[in-house]
Length: 637
Image 1: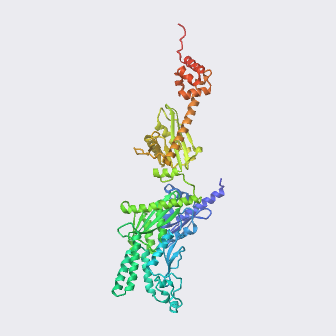
Image 2 (image 1 turned 120 degrees about the horizontal axis):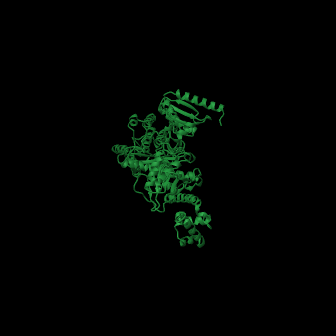
Image 3 (image 1 turned 90 degrees about the vertical axis):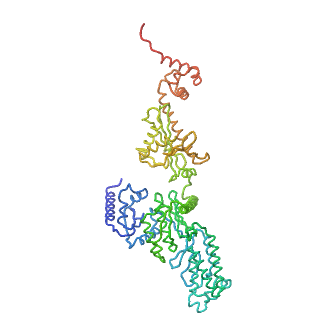
């Protein structure tokens, strides 16, 4: 138990935090939440620090799971005021990388992926690198596949005569004739700028064409080169015209290899995210002039309960912070971004270097709902799902996450569940002609029985035979009161029954404000029922999802029957059966199991009885019930 000194310390810390929150300015900036040990546990940005931070300390019922836990751990607050929302966004990104706070979404950097760099120096070089430096060079990427990047580099070298040497080609060194041409010059791979055979202006014009190619402007580049080729031909510069024709042919072959995904030739980036548990994978398709240039992926962790729109916003912010040279006309997303986030992204892109303000203002954020554009987003999302599964498999191999039960995954996909059903609870009722009503609840976690959390209910409020009332009472007793606090809420509830039982279960859960998916499994045809849907559906007999549901149903049935029999036996053994001479508990049990009740035993013939307990004891039973049931004589005649 905390002592009074600790309580006073906590109260003082809480009071200090409230003062800081109350005194916050309305400027843009970043805020850092710290725990009692002084560690930064969350970093966020805000257009208005006062409004944003106060939202954490309002009505706790409006906070979702992870944020509610975060608020419980906040002991201190620190803010940094910035001059604009863009500065706040950049500062937030840098601090998250540096501090790695516990409750922030973790976006894994693509620093291990290669980039294509065009150096900032006289006669720029083009090569592959995995290290991005702030030296003024231009970087394209990251490329998720090194093979793809090498093919791009080979294409550039086959079309353009870019130098491959590492010589320092300063104006002074060239004038002093410090270098001599290499083999590349003789095989027409380079025009020899090292000896002054090519001017810097001419070389830089070629580099501009390379940049246009890397940005996907192949059609525009072909038109420009074709115009230049005709001009050279008119001036009888046939050798130069031939070189240009070779470049044009190479560009056309490259364009033919690119996948055409739209016919409108609009530049756009397509963003989609796939998520599972606490992990997610984001994919961006880079489309230029209607052709898919390539894709880039990014992995997230610590994402559980985070809205998809928030993940997309974080993805876009990080992507455009690191790739400012590729700004499209349209940005497609699988979910609509909040207007505030769109505005922040517009501000971010406007502040990036070398951007035309009119282009930035014309950028449109679109969430396609139907047609070819919606299919494009779906294709992007399908790729994200594929890469996420590969990523999770690698995590499993490294022992970072436990292997998933294949039936759980199949069940999630079959029922379109938002979360993997790691905990499933199944209910069944048992009775005999309305007597000794019982209900059972069995629990499976990760596809295996957890018998320590099985529960059985002796139903008290049932009169006669009423399965619906029995199911209602069992669910109320499980998901309210003491049991609701002892056991966690499941990811899926299975009812042994059909449409009526499932609808009663859904109605009961709604009354209890329990939002958990519920299904029914009917015994006769193994049909699956969903609440509010009249027609059931079947799963293939070989489906792992069906086999898991059958195991759950059979286990719940076994558990309910065993408890019902125990109650019935206990009750009946306390009747007059054991008062019959020669009948002990074992014989009484045999009779009850065979005939079902004392009433049925009293009406059985001697032949029927002796098949169960033998002729001698059968005779005792007949005599006993005869004496008990014969009319009593009134005294005297």
